[in-house]
Length: 367
Image 1: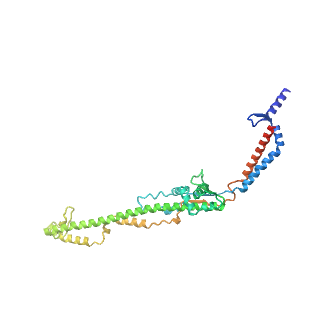
Image 2: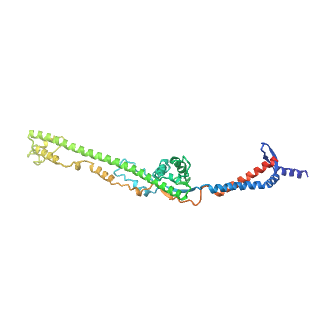
Image 3: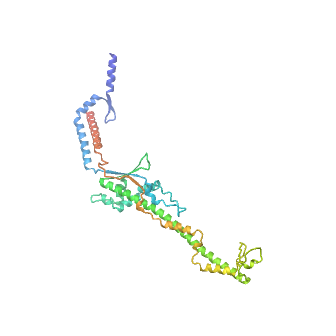
């Protein structure tokens, strides 16, 4: 008997709760009493629920829906950047092997994030007209429009599994405009990146061309100087040969020698030029003075000219280049990103019920 009574007291104790009052203290209220209070104040709770739902409905009716369009990006394919890969022939010393798909894609992503590039896109297409109208509040200029209504609506997400897979989103009240601008901006950033990389490669090639031209000019200039120096040396040797009466090298060999043919000229490194005789010296001087071009006699000149011709023949076709692969083109969203009516109504319902219960408890306590 006592055991049953203890169990009943414990059961009643478990059905009690503490409800704070406005004075900061609390009183013990059973769940049955709370349910009775709720039933008595059902009209108040229903009115609170209806009020919150009405406010939520008005909010959903008047608030401007925002639509989100998303595009998915991947690195370019090898054939998309093939035009940037220049053969090592003729470009010795240029680091053009760095233009890999990952490198090019990194430059593209850097440009895509650039505020300066977004502002350039914003100004070129005069997008402030889409936001600024006769109903726009005073003080909303182009700079503020770009910062708050355009640039702030870009979203950036990197895939956790594949860091090279990037999703870019853009929000706008018009789903068609959101998709259109996002696709146009990706194409704009791609064009800027291709142009930037093409200019880098072209600048490197032009620098190499200038270097080759300088080396070729130096070789031509030095070849002419060497030819003139040779002529001067030969003329000096001719003067000596004439004074010594050496017309040819035949006098060096005796016809009674040990079988050496008469008239056979033997030259050694130690033999002075005048020992060749005046006839040979005059002939060489005449040939050198009548030479029209020194190019055939310049060592390595043709190799440099071959490299120069190769570099001048390089043409970068930017239309065939791409710094990104658009895996998914942005499309108009079929439902708004915000507000979400179901979530708004659920939150409004919960808030209305809680607010109504609170009002009922307050009035019940005052009584």
